[in-house]
Image (tube, rainbow, N blue to C red; front, top):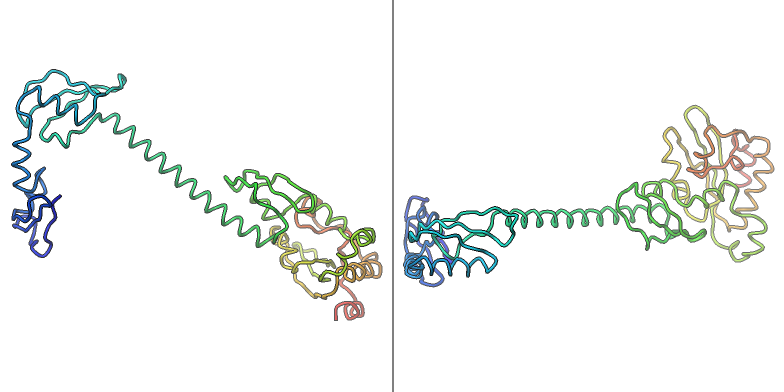
Length: 319
């Protein structure tokens, strides 16, 4: 209710000008204004005049200020220095005492206050945790879409931690459970198994003839796992970096894209089959990591070979 006139301030021990919203301007030493309940002299006189003048009036005023749940123990009236014993409505909370100097500023049960403050802190922490979880989910969702495009439906994901499994829907194989961290590193397990076997077949294009006309890439990779080098020819309808994002999750594995050839999906499939017949059948060998790793990074032994394409084959299919 009182505001300090900043230009008049010269230190806490000097006088300054104040404005009371009820009684207007007044001048007073700043230190006194800070320490007193009523900085405005007129407000102080009103408070003094309005203070209960006997024990019964003070008791009624206390109960009115604190609420009917409180009880007031018998006390001796001593004006503004009256000490009063109080109990709140909770029988488990101990009694407490207050010196009643200002009715409008009577403080209630300290135990109730601590519990209320604790509850507010817990609610604030929960709100912060929820907000933080939402932020983490949004960051993960952006990374998932960047990695997998629109292949998966994330509308049923209840994100809590990076390791707690969530419900993800694959556009090919339907719903499955997977941790958010594993999803960024892999994807649908059934799709990975299909990739190991080779997704496209003559039967596939007979059943889905229109699919054969969509744009695709035939790609040629050079890979190195520690000291072992090998090569891979494959097909993707995305860009090669997205198709092989999972390769980056295996420590010790490096790869380079040696060539890409844009064509229709059916043409890419047929060209890949020719390369496998002409070159891959004579150059295949066991890959230098176990099958679960092959599944994780989506590299199958049938599409990899240890020797590079000959210059003639490279020129024939990629130049």
